[in-house]
Amino acid sequence: MTKKRRIPRLLQLVLVVLGIYLGFVLTFDVILGQVIPKSLLTMYMFFVIAGVLMVFTFTEESAQELIGPIKALVEDPSKKMVRNVVFVIVPLLAGVYTYASLMPSFEAPVELRTIHPAPPSSVKAFGKRFDLATLENPYRKFEKEDPDKFHKLVKQGGEIYIQNCQYCHGDRLDGKGPYAAGLNPTPLNFQDVGTIAQLQESFVFWRIATGGPGLPAEAAPWISSMPIWQDFLSEDEIWKVILFLYEYTGRQPRSWEHE
Image 1 (tube, helix red, strand yellow):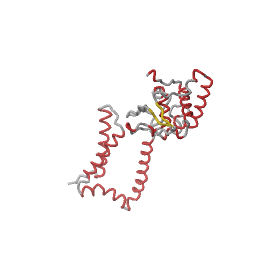
Image 2 (cartoon, rainbow, N blue to C red):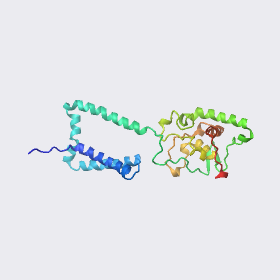
Image 3 (cartoon, rainbow, N blue to C red):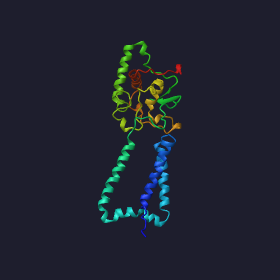
Image 4 (cartoon, rainbow, N blue to C red):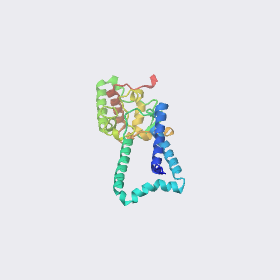
């Protein structure tokens, strides 16, 4: 009587893990019609792999049967060619996966990103404290009082922006600067009606001056690569940049009177 060949223990483990992974994806995508967040799927699969490994190595015999092919691949001289191929392919696949996982996406995220955190009532910057409810751009008044001077200030703000900000936010203010691909999440698109068009200039001043580290701790973790620009720009330079942001995008800052 011919003895049936068993599926190798290692292959069984791989098939079980792959089956559970596909089960998660199909359940959420097909049955529930929801995309499972990558972070949640990674957490699930971590526990799945740990649990499957415990089951497959429950006895000494099953553990030896599982690691036998791996041990043979490493130690058996007759498997030198296969071993070399595996040792080349596995690191390449790991590198491709790592590179792909680090690439930013310009698609809307599955998990909502809080773009406009609630501002504090006051903020400390440039060695003094500002009340955000009453803080105004000191140059905004020239938009009506002295248009020529206003346009000169906007031009200066544009020069400061190009020298410091366009690397991330782009020369078109669309969040697609030359450094944007290295940031996750990608920089904000100021052309989007959902960004600065929804904000007071005092809010924008706070975010630029204090950067990502200045975001409120009680709602952490925030996701922001914004540097603390008060360490590199003067107060006047930040206000001029803000004039440029609104002028270039054709937006008007919101005011507290219209809230």
